[in-house]
Length: 434
Ligand code: SDX
Image 1: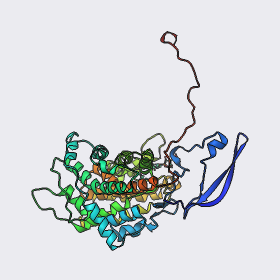
Image 2: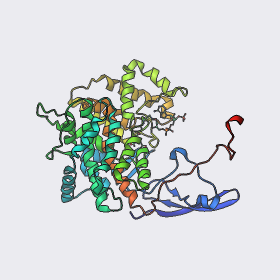
Image 3: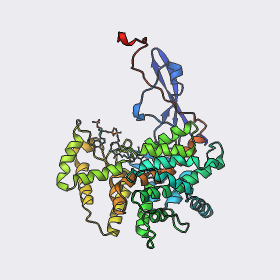
C-alpha cells in the first residue's frame, strides 16, 4: 500500500525544557494527524490516550466515518447506497480490492468464494467437544482459531497468493461454520452449502433447512439479511478490527487473527450489543416501563446502559441505524408481524431517548445494534446468534484491514507503552519479616 498522507505543517511541543517539532499530515477527507513517532525519543515522555479516543493507529483507505455528520463510506461509497443497490459479495470485493468489480471480476470472485464454502469433514469433531448450550460465539472463537490447523497451505502471510486464498477461505467458510454452530445448538444435522445459491441465501438455508423437507428461499428475507450483512461489514478501527490488526502485526496467521477479532467483538459494549439490546427490550417488556430504564441509564451509580444507544465515534444518528430501521420495518411487514410488541417498545424508547435532555446533551443516538436485534429475531435467529451474524459480516472488514496492514510500509509490531504508577524498586522480604 503506498502512503497517500500529505504534509500539513507541524506542531511544537515542549516538556521538561525539551522542544520537539512534530510533522502533521492530512488525508483525503477527515481530521489531520500529528506524527508522534519521534516524541518519546525526543522528549523521554510518552503520550497518554487510554481507549485511543484521540489516536490514529494506522493509515487506511478502506472505510471513512464522520461521527458528527453521521457519514459512513466504504471505499468512498455511502453505506446507504451500497445497502440499497449492491449485494454482499460485490461489497466484499469492493472492500478487498478498492473498486467495484467489473462483470468478469465479479463472476470470478463469486465463483472463488463459492468453491471454498465447504469445511474439512474433520472440523465437525470440534463441535462435539462443546456442550449443546455453549454460546455460539464460544464455538466460533474455537473453530475459527482451529482453521489454521487445516490450511497450512495458506498461512504464510508473506506470500500474496496464500494471503488471497486464506482471505477467500475465511469469507467463504464463516457462514458454514456459523450455521453449523446454530444447528449444533438445536440438535439438528449440519446442512451442506449449495453452489447454486447466493452467499446469503446459502447461509439462511444452512441454518433453517432440515433433511425432512425442501427449504423455500424467501427472497425478501434474503435481501434484508444481505443488507444487514453489508451494514456490518467494516467500521474503521473499532475494537475488534484493532484487535485483528494488533494480532496480525506480530505475524500471526490470518485464521488466528480473525479468531482474536471474534473474541473482541463478543463484548456487550461492542458486537455483543445487538444481543444485549434485544435482551434489554425483552426486560423492559412494555412501553410503560421505559421511564424506569431511562432513569437507570442516567444513574451514575447504576452500571445499566441503554444497549443499542451511544457510540464512541457517532455523535449523530448512526447512518447504519437509519438503513437498519427501514430493513426492520420491511422484514416485519413481509412476515406480517408489524405489531411485534418489542418493536413498539423500541420505537417508543427511541422517541423518548431522542427527546430526553440527558441523551441529547451526550449525543446518544440509536446505533446499528438497536434495530438489528429485532430484525434478526423476526428472521428466526435466536438472540445468542446475533453477534455470530455480526462476526460473519465483519470478517470481510477484518480481512480487508488485515490485508492492508500486511502491505503497509509503516507497519511494525504493535507495542504500546504505559505510565507506571506502581511500587518503586524494593527488596524481597522473608516471610518472618512481613
Ligand atoms: C458497536 O467502534 C465501533 O465502530 C463499534 C461498532 C462497529 O461497527 O464496529 O459501531 C459496533 O460496537 C456499536 C456500539 C454498541 N454498544 C452499545 O450499544 C452498548 C451501549 N453503548 C455504550 O456502552 C457506549 O455508548 C459505547 C461503548 C458504545 C461508547 O462508549 P464511550 O465512548 O465510553 O461513550 P461516550 O464517551 O460517548 O459516553 C459519553 C457519556 C458517558 O457519560 P459521562 O461519563 O460523560 O457522564 O454517555 C454515557 C457515558 O456514561 N453513555 C451512556 C450510554 N453510552 C454512553 N449512558 C447510557 N446509555 C448508554 N448507552
